[in-house]
Amino acid sequence: MITITGLFTHPIKSCAAQAHPQGVEVSVAGLAYDREWVVVDQQGVFMTQRRWPRMALIQPLVQDGQITVQAPGDNVAVSVRIWSSDTLGRDEGDQVAQWFSDFLQTPCRVLRNHSRARRYVLTERVRPWEEKSQGWRQIGDQLNGFGFADALPFLFTNEASLEELNRLVQQSGEQAVPMDRFRANVVFEGLPAYEEDYVLGLSSEGLSFAFIRACTRCPMPNVNQRTADVGTQPGLALAQSRQFPQGTLFGMQAMLVESKPQMLTIGQTLDVEYSF
Image 1 (cartoon, rainbow, N blue to C red):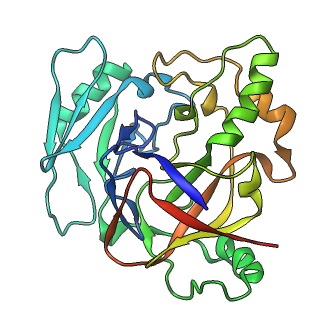
Image 2 (tube, helix red, strand yellow; image 1 turned 120 degrees about the horizontal axis):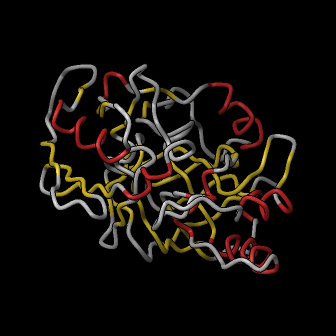
């Protein structure tokens, strides 16, 4: 059994997280408003902290039917009403684009995803999980769309795994890193370090998550989410301890395969189903 200790959304892809201490709505598309917006450059390519680490300082807050964005040293917040639009996508306008362009010091636009334009989990990503699930849960045609997350709508991380990783980080003479470096949606405790590698899924009454695959890590965890400074850790520790044929791994990407309308809450427990 695991216990949820943290719930986070990232309303604007690659910008700061919004914590949800009171819980957050969950659906097959992910946590409510997670990666619902994206910043794109003049060529329409989405921007991330990999090249623009200052994005970590942009603080979105979804509340009372609108998203408000602020950044350190900026006295003017910009707000956008969350519309119920039937269009396939939405450019959030010149005022918002100018605010982001000024802060990031490069021309850009902000786009919002829409359910009719959502991407779908690729069948080839799900097939290996189905082969080892042995009928625990059926995905079938449940490859529901999601927003601007990289590959799957949920990312889970284990507190014990971070503790083990930080042991190596501190051995190198660096300070331990917080979990926000890994930009998870759901943080949990209750498993030994890296035992999530062998977890098929998590479930409680009316709710089942499939752990589809481990999350392959780029250098972005080296970005300090509070200062936007770029270092060498935890990247070096990950390369030392979590290097696999598919890449450097930390956390589990997941999808919801069974759910009644509900919220996830801090302290909620879920049963663990192993893949062996």
